[in-house]
Image (cartoon, rainbow, N blue to C red; front, side, top):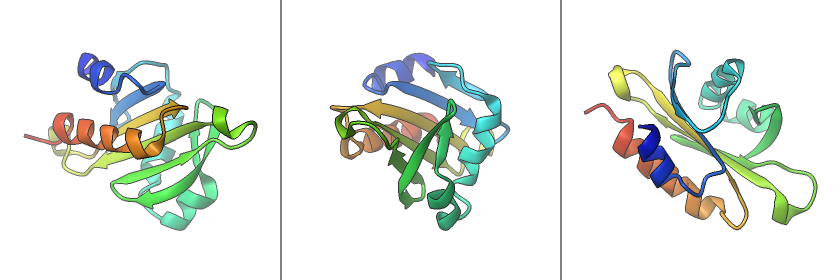
Length: 130
C-alpha cells in the first residue's frame, strides 16, 4: 500500500493511512500515535472539528470544510502562498471491515480542489473492503 500511496499521492507533502485502532498502514513520515484519535474524532461533530482544528506533528490546521467522509482545511499564519493544506478521508467499511482513514498534507501550488479528490479516490480504491 505504501508504494501505491507514494505513486497516487505523489504531490502530497505527507501522507499517513491508518485504521480505527491507530495502526499505521502506510506513511511517508513519522506520526505521533497520540494525534491519530483526535483525527478520527473530527468526524463525530462538525462544530468541534471546526473549533479544535486538526493537529498534525504539533501544527494546527484550521478546518474549513466538514463534509464527511472528508474534512479538510489549511494551516494559517504567515504568507498565504506558503501555507499548507491538510485533508482526512474516512472509509466506514475499510480494510478488515473497520473504519480506515487517509490523511495528506499539501503545499502550494497544490490546492484542496485538486488534492482532496486524489485522496478520496485513493481511499476508495485501496481502503474500501473488497
